[in-house]
Every structure is written in structure tokens, then in C-alpha cells.
Image (cartoon, rainbow, N blue to C red; front, side, top):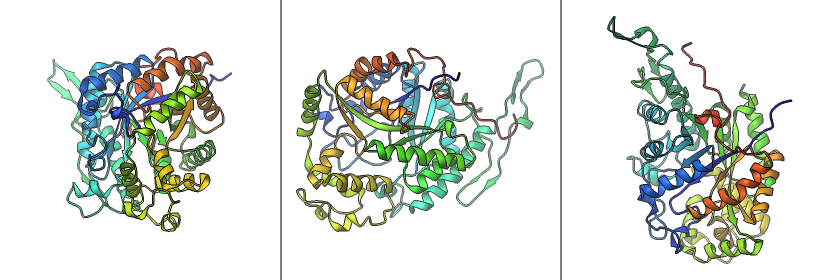
Length: 441
């Protein structure tokens, strides 16, 4: 009999919490974003709960204008390096863009984090949808959607070759003969492609995991095809079980069509849990967050998704026809579709839409008792909509602590989540193998 399938849980960390007003709570720190002690506390909390991994989102631009929400972020690979020294088992995943980096430098940094953490690094691969990010790199606008993914494909080809460029046994370190390495096992790439020209080899030995765990977070058609070719985990957003199940079936089928084992792709939708000892207590918690929102901020964020101006929207009206017509966007295509589908399905006004997006930006919100939250997770997991979840606490650390204290024991009691770590690397936590070295090391 095969072993029972187990949940994978990732702690998605974001300064004071995922709700846009979390920093305003009396029990939150408005300066959590640059407080290393705060991030260490979160990492150690997630590790004590035996989460597979933690995740830091990132983008090379301010979040909004800075007027209504903390807009800054520590550089995630530097922060992960610090967290790696304050933890010993939990996986460490960060977002880094293929559009505004070069393969050699990024492959080197990611390999270094994997070495420093002893095999716990993961890379959430994004192509950067925002025009404001492009402006920080001397561009009038971001490259087109299809071009960004074409560049990302070649970027991954080069990065994988660089990580493979040191074969096993390349380092001899023979004091007697004076030979440190075998040059025949250090491989030049000589890569010349459409976007990159890279000689190689990398100046960092192959990472402990072979490659950092490769994660992808786009759900557009280009994003799903990219994930099917490259990703080992997918972060995704859905507002209903039906949408999540359809995505799950689709991405697994695309992975199989790409010649890969679908079980080698871990699908992790986001869930924003508002947890109370009673359902009414949980609803009161959700209302507390909602009452602290600034509608102007939500309106600006909605306009940014649809690449338009806030003046296009009327707070107490439905989405305008120009938006419902689904104009072609160069940015976040899957997120715009999700918002339109939610608005149409529930006939939401703009004011109601931005309220619904305030906690998780389109990720599933679950409000209830620990048993109700656990039941939702189990239903999605056993019903073919998820291999696990991105846990997106509305406030941090309190929401993550509540999940660990009250929801995890229920999942463990049903044999769905580990009691303790069994492996030491992120790939071991996710049940994934070290990739074979293409240079036959």
C-alpha cells in the first residue's frame, strides 16, 4: 500500500500581515518591514510548527505610493541569508525577477543561499508585471507579456546549466599533489541565445539541492505553460473551490503534456484564515480589519491591476463595461480575470470588490473556527484542488500563531501533516528529488 498523501504548507510572510490595514492594529508593529527581529520571530514560529517553507514576496519598486501602507521591502535574498542562520530546517523561498536580473549573477546568489542554508533555498520565478518596476531600470515600459516569458525560458535554461557546470567530484582538494579541482569537470557553457550570452562556468559549486526549488506564481496561459516546463511548486490564487480544482486539473495536464511527472509539481493556492473560537468571533475579527481599510488605497490598487486610472471606477457602482470587456493587459492577466469573475459572480460593487481584496488580493478568505478552517483545507486537498496551501495570515505574528496553535493539531490528528521534520532540505520536505546534472556528473 502506498504512503498516504500529506499536505504541504508554506508560510507566506509579509511585514505586519497580509491585510492591507494590518499595520494599523494596536497589536501590530507599523515598522515590522525593516525589523530583522520581527522576521526572525516569524521564521522561527513557522519552523516550530514544521511548515515546509516560508516565502518572501518581492518587487523592485515601492508598493503603491507609500501613503496608506508600508511600501518598502528588504532585499529578499539578503533577508533569507539572515533567516537561514536563525533556523535550521524550514525551507526559504524568495521572489526574484527574470526580467530585471542576469542569469549569471542570480544563479550565483541563489546557489550561495542554498549553500549557506545547507540546501533550503527556493526561487519564486516572476517576470514582473508592473510598469513602475520597468521605470527603475531605465525603461519606458515593461516588455510585453509573451516576451517576458520568452526571456524567462532562456533565463532558466542558462541558470540550470550554470548550476550544473560543476560536476560531482570536480573538487579534489588533494594536498599531496596540489590539485584542487579537475578542470574537465568544470564546464563552460558558451551560451549564445536571443537574450543572453554567457560563458560559464559558475564560480560557485553546484548547490546542495542541485537547483534551488523552482516555484512559479503566474496563472496566465503563458504562466501555466512556463510552470508546466519548469516549476516544481506553483503559488496560485482562487476565490472558489471550483476555480481551484479546474486550475489544478489544467496545470497537472500541462505538466504531463510537457513530459514531466505531474506529481513533481506541488500546487499551493493561498488561503487567508480569520480564526476565532466561534464563527461570530472570527467574523468580528474580519470586520475589525475591514473597518481599518482606506478605500482610496484599494481603489488605486484596483486601478493598477487594470492598468487604468482610479477615476474610471465609481465606488458604489458595478465594474464599468470597459473593464468587463476584459481589455488585453501586459501586466497581471490572471489576477484581472479573477477579479472580474468574482465581481460578476457575486454582483459586487467596486466598494465591495476592494473590501474583498483587502485581505488577500484575490486569494481565498476563510472565516471561522479552527475546525471550519481545517475542514476547508481538507476539502480542497482531498477534492483535487490543492497539494497544500500558502498560509497568508491577515496579521503577523498573531495570525500565524493562531493557525499553528489551533488548526495544525486538527490536521495532524487526521494524519495529514507532519509532527516533525523528516528531512533537512527543502526538496526533501516537498518530496522532490535532486535534479540530475546535465553534464553527467
